[in-house]
Image (cartoon, rainbow, N blue to C red; front, side):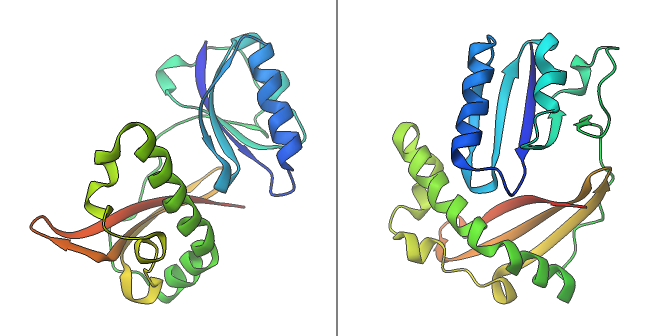
Length: 188
């Protein structure tokens, strides 16, 4: 079995996504990670089910996590994307276009940060230890115009992949400033 990242369409409902995850489990697969705020999951599934799951109408993109696991079995290229290397621009300060793009997804970023801290605090609180003295509002008090300090991007067959380094204003300690690193995909 191989590992895949699945991104659902914007229109996919929670009920539909839960049903999809249930079908993966019933097929002998498993859910590794769930990214509810960006409508995605990382899964392991049997090879003979991949095409069926890729063609589900709520699936936007499905990609193999490790390109070394590829087989020669043909898949529908409209839905299936390989995890090839994407050439990225050099890290640079954000342009006005980058600031606008990050502001569009800012609510999702903040929701994902809060969700990440809560999830990590359940089993590995050291992950967010430097932010332990901050409440959720302080943790997500960053402003893109002031705190997005670096971006890079690359074009894929399904859109742009964009990375950003965002300062968390409430973290400045003996280790220096605190940052989060964000990745999002702007689907074409």
